[in-house]
Image (cartoon, rainbow, N blue to C red; front, top):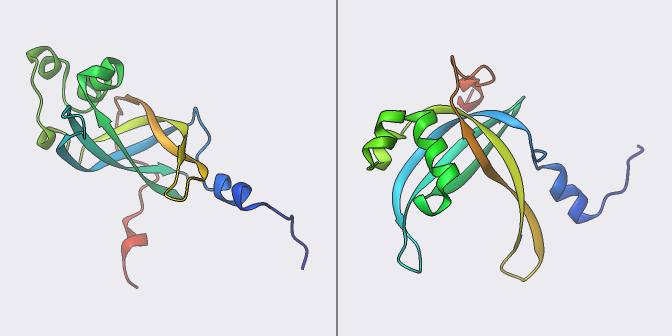
Length: 140
């Protein structure tokens, strides 16, 4: 059997969705979050669909990151709710959208540098998620 030798880093990076890719997504869960510094945010956990690939990616939205915060509210809730000046996590539950994927370097628990996918931006989605196939979740 022939193969292309890959480093551990190359294997790990092959699992990443390329930065700049727009994917359909839905919010799996949303909850209030307080950072270690006491800052309020909403933690959104997305199921992101990229062809046959499903990936869970989470992000925190907060007014401190105004663009992502506004785009999340307008794309999944409404412009009116954004202009009202107050939002709650339950308004995001099970909402669909499109997301732009980014990549970010981080250090794991052993101090090794790794890359992960992040949500770079959020857009309104028309219609339903086309690549979603719930039959993959069935045990048979």
